[in-house]
Length: 618
Ligand code: SAM
Image (cartoon, rainbow, N blue to C red):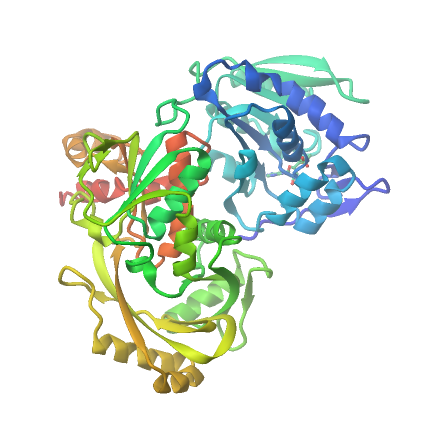
């Protein structure tokens, strides 16, 4: 089953939640918050460790947790960070959960602590969607990010990509729930630690002590909290002295140039600046939303694959990331999308998706007569959204950007990193990447009647919000230097509209239609390019050693220092952009990744050189 299983939740008379599947409580009946502070936060040396590190490079602190449950430990850490954390820096909380609670259950479980009420509300307002995969939620005003890996631990922990400063081991009692304390997990925890990483747990079970010790932790018993006699504190004594350095230098606000102010560059600039970078965007157009991202309306809806593959999961992660990212921004409105299959093959895919849906009913429903209803899709107005994203960002508009990638300079200014976030215009200057230009045309008009947000899709899509009606898009070859509208594309769109919605077709035939064409940059495997720019010559020179390694390559293998790519979004630019922004922000700052290792490899630009090398066509 792709949907994560639900816990079998019951409530004790005193309000403590229990999972009957395991027969254990989520937190101590006496005072869960006090226990959380004593066992986990104090057990890992917080808040003192946040201040003890004189080296300001380590300003970010990562707590990882086995068993997210109600989010109580997370809230306890967040509250302590607000009250006693450093004035700068960032708290990352990465947690793993196999049987997620829903929002109302979490509210009820967190209700006993009025002092957490405000934070509990903020968490529950963004409560993660029930879906297998990785979701990231941020509260930048508090410099706090939660990364939640949903899935059974044996599946999710090996895929995760992080280095923790502290590990909270909170997976129910080992006697009742061996899965969260299995001996296979200890080396995975150690792999996600650095020398000095702390670990804490409420149990002193022999298997836990031995597992930690064998994986390289020094383990100590300490007096327990409340009625529990003892608890454990541990410290990792293997590994290298410090966690892997972020790619950016240790200055307070690393300087990052983002090339391109379309949706890709705008989301990146927004996310990087929120994380503390000094961002400058360069774009050759004279203002926002003039290029491919500049249609009057855009749709964010999921592409749901029938099988549970890396690609299917990453498509879902990206969609949910976009939902969260755009939720409160100007120019974004949630809407239901009626998604009819475009042909027999798609009808079959939809049936398979519905037989084992990756999303719950709050997100996805079957339509009578075949089709999917995407209940949390988004309609975007780029003309409002893009300026909002770029509101606080320095943008250099107009004129081609003079880039010197070796010197990491743009228009003569040096940067710590450069992100190439342009679409098709960038393709010509990056011959090492395989980006194909595709022309897309939409039609739109102003209706006499206002409509609530609505969306229909069946291959082509038709969108309505207020008076604006927009539909398309064609998908054709782009020749010549700039996109051009054509009567043939308009005719294609008009006949598509007749199939999608005859009512609209009638209104459209009386309206004054406007056509708009844009060029998308697409890749052969239809996945975006998100990651370091690869050094093609170095990869070609290393062909033999790559072959010996079985053609395995890390996402950041053969990276050109300081240069990153966020492109190749095809016709899903508004879906990929927020997710890519979070991935690259984490990569640059050395933060826990919001995606799995497999996903990072699947979207890494270096795959475009590795594959032809392997086939022998390069
Ligand atoms: N830290 C939590 C809190 O602050 O509320 C309490 C965690 S509770 C004691 C243990 C958690 O581990 C539960 O939420 C449970 O669903 C999760 N869990 C148990 N077995 C699991 C497994 N095999 N894979 C992933 N999660 C699991």
